[in-house]
Amino acid sequence: MIIKGHFPIESFKELDTPFYYYDLDLLRDTLDAVGDAVRRDPEFKVHYAVKANANPTILRTIAHAGFGADCVSGPEIEVALKAGFKPEKIVYAGVGKTDKEINLGLDHDIFCFNVESVPELEVINDLAGAKGKTTRVAIRVNPDVGAHTHANITTGLAENKFGIALTDLDRVVDMARALPNVELIGLHFHIGSQILDMTDFTALCNRVNSIVEHLETRGVEIKDINVGGGLGIDYKHPNHHPIPDFALYFATYRRHLKLRPGQNLHFELGRAIVAQCGSLISRVVFVKEGTKKKFVILDAGMTDLIRPALYQAYHRIENISSDSEEIERYDVVGPVCESSDVFGKAVDLPLTRRGDFIALRSAGAYGEIMASHYNCRQLPGAAFSDTI
Image 1 (tube, rainbow, N blue to C red):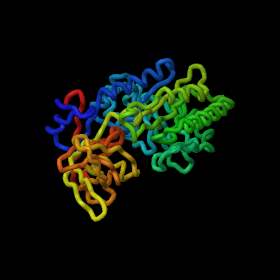
Image 2 (image 1 turned 90 degrees about the horizontal axis):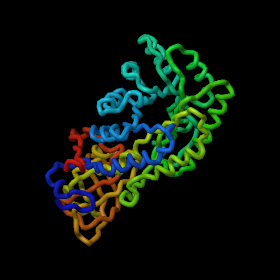
Image 3 (image 1 turned 135 degrees about the horizontal axis):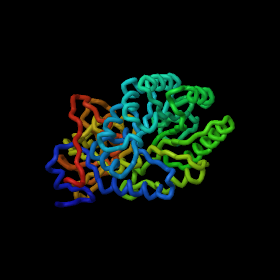
Image 4 (image 1 turned 180 degrees about the vertical axis):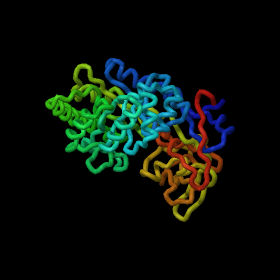
């Protein structure tokens, strides 16, 4: 087998493109790095955010490492359970939980519902009562803390749809404590995604500290604090920084969040765990000479990786099969009948020809899971370093 970089090119030639290639060794190394960073803190509980990637092999690998799961739908709870995540380590968030989804969580006695509205709290209480159960809930608080990230993935501002407003928190806490079929155990926060500035997390810690202190003056004990996830990755340099700085991330909370004795601190990491282990592998269909530019047209499109079209997100683009030392500048695009089906403009690549393999890096998070059948295209396949 001939290896170019860390990609088994010869094996790729036997596969239909496009497909996602997952480096499971890197995933396991990343999980080890998370474990090492929290080993000294038994009160730190890490839940993998299933929305980032629900590929069964990825989920089984993470579950085997002992992590919990953060789910935002009933089907995510089902795939997490099937992959081996323990119900007592599953937290369930989301602004629009249906009765069917809530009952699924109740039937499996999941650890906690992260409640996002008063109507949801009332429905959970009623459904739990119908089953003769008491279920644990945490109130998701909208902390009105901004994050230095894309507007579409910022979730902690007052204008966002998520959580309970700070001005309503006392009323909702009192309501939860009075309901007979829910046990209020904690507070849940999440300010956004792809955050690289640790001062954003410091600001969250300060807000959490003030909220907990306020509730304590009212005689409210908070057992569990969930600060969500949000840690970003290095999209520009995946080879130099394949694993995020988890030590700095957890140290920020260790230093700035004032945990009380017996309190647990929950994290919901997704992108930071799986993004770098995955690449979208595509073949060049045509190289087209335009009037002022050259186009590399791939057999992968926005149906396979929507982030560039949706967020104008950057993914490093590499020609992993060309040995040419000549560099050309291309717009790298897909075949979908949309002008937004563009992966990158003015991308410098080795001289590229029809049939070359192109890797879109750092695509393990919000790549395969967001793929669609638009234009009646088939969903991309998956291949793994352990079996290829």
